[in-house]
Length: 391
Length: 51
Image 1 (cartoon, one colour):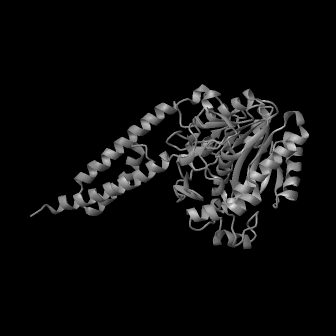
Image 2 (cartoon, chains in turn red, yellow):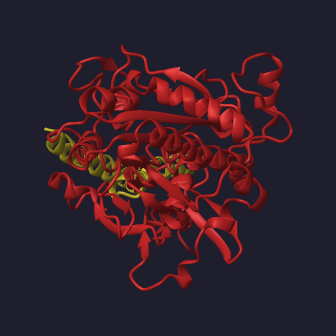
Image 3 (spheres, chains in turn orange, brown):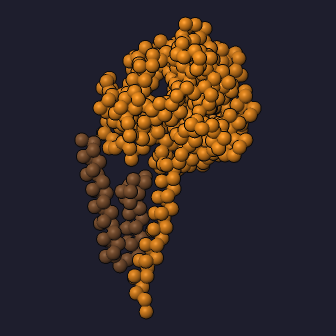
């Protein structure tokens, strides 16, 4: 006669092991998913962030920096830095930066692109948020999978959080978890947390490469008033206003301009402008996936931006951006970012011909909508030797 | 300081994980046994740096 207690415990342990192995594998695969990126013809070299601040070497946030330029002209003209994935849960920013690295040709100036500005945050999802671990974009050659990511650095990489986060150097008190928020830790510091060190490395990049323009790509929930807009430091108000008019007039969508609040510290559009000669601009597109009143939080919502509960919030006047049955598809959001960048460079170059940044072969809003984001993603299997990188 | 706190934290997690396993072995009530294992799961995921 078998021991009934022993048998019961064995069954419970077996069920536990099954659950542990299944969940552990899922989390492990999500954290270590390799995303292939094919460096396009415009990429002259690929550096690491630790090139600018050795304190990041060996850490998960030693991100890839893709340097685009014109081979023959060298480093004439101006320089821009494009940041995707400061908040990886806002995928249009990463995808727009991805398409620029894979497709852009630079006729004048240099463009530095960091598609995953906070790699640590791309390896976790929102605790209690029921996020999918990843999402997939259809392409002509198959499907490419990207990590979903979160707004904050992974607690496995930066822990513990303080009771209150005191921003450096302003000493402004912010929410405790924002010590892991890359858009609250600018300009960073060399002896700070991982997220602060990452911002410090990017500040060093901006200074040493004489960056003129920094464009930080984001997305926002529709219940947040800063949406469908360019957030500009006071140094970039004219540039942003002119770009906004050009976008609204030529690209087929409207985008507003917000001014960076002087009293709110740690954000890229505030601190980069205050601590470096560069002009920082932050772009926001609508992402219903982030709204608190959303329904099922799945890949479909992430990619279609269609949600009946957020729409209902809109009918009650609670949204700052329209939402209908069409939703906010990822192609619309990626296209808006790309056209905005194209127009910002155009206006910048007209205002500063000696520091021009001329970028070609990047799809515009109407093209991304017509063909889809995946159409412009390169097939890693056909990548030329030495041009395949992983994010 | 953060490194020291993190080290102590992992020691704490390991301590509680061992405690849950110990209690699971000692328990004779199936509901308590299931509860110990369910609570153990996030501790192990953290200890192995999976989540």
